[in-house]
Image (cartoon, rainbow, N blue to C red; front, side, top):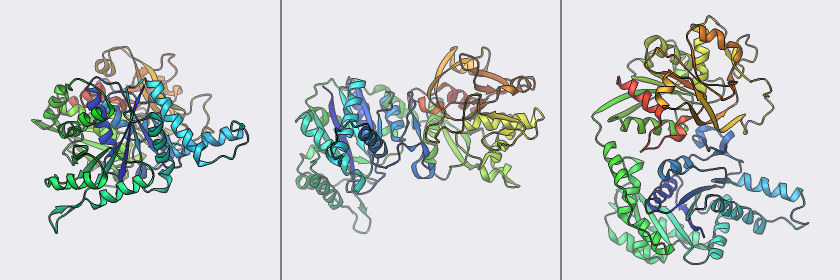
Length: 532
């Protein structure tokens, strides 16, 4: 039977529940356990697919095509297990499912209520993921902060699962802020006490309390006070201090005894973890002998989390090559100003990640042209591939009005457009290609050298495609179609094969990068940017 761990947060949002959950998952997996992770989000959106990146950050896409919370990226990078469509549940999905069932008459005329119908739906999703994965331990993080109105059905649902699973089969971890008052020179535990009291008022008593702080809590009296007032053992109060890199968190929490206590409380007998590889990886992160400057040209750069997986993938590849990556966050619209191109000088490489809509695309065209003309390594992802194709069509193939059907439906040369049979009528929240799709790589190309295999599978999230009517012309002008769908209908990757690295891919390789196993395209891009 799957053991359940529920992770909640208190005092303020953004504490790092996701990193705590992901780190614990890594530590349990290192003990030989099969681990799965899940995020419950109380917002009413069905998924984050239509939410502004400025509010929510990136949308992480699973292999089976779910648009999910960015915390799932942390889970996958830390635990190294692929999430799926059941790994992220929102209030919107819960209510949508319940209403559909009511319309179909599945409740046999009952009055539909929060309890039991909404809570049963939540419990069903948790149990379905446990069944699908066959996990020894399922870690479920509840988004938001204790006390939020919208989160109460989720707390009630996990309370019920805890009672139904029985003692030793369910564990509650509460992550809280312990603020440091510089005026008095001390940490304060009262916010944690109030947060735990709020959680207990909802029927859940935490078994483990994780104290988040920016400064190390050196006064052990804080731990004793929290233990006494919150009714837990002192070794069940765990410190979690802000670290230079996220990937140090598992090592810190292992030293603090988090996984040991979890295993004890759940009655799990496991061997000691082997964290040798992870420790060596963290050491490499702190011992780089060189650096590389990468310009990230995007439309949402004011919130770095909008490109979280891209930034992490760049770091993974740099660390593996004894380098520190310095990301220059460049607003694409700034490039459109008269002197905007100056922002691109001095860069070792340029990456243009995904996005939607017209805003900033002219700046992305400028970035692609600059990289092509100045022989700067270029990596275009999704929209970054599309803008590179448009720029090439305009400036290298003589199609001055080349554009995308997304940006200019009236353009006479839509080199990026809907494919025959596709339609604009598809909901914005259900983009035409979502999840994993196969790609056949053209031999002798940069793509072939990077992957070292003929067929790959990568994750997509987009609506528009390379227009096949322009294949012949663009190839004649020097563009290489280096990746196609197995049936040859869809262009998945393009490149300028004569350059050190000039690659555009329709998919999102950043989702598959790991800190201990960087993605091959990011590895090659960083290598080219380093001059290797």
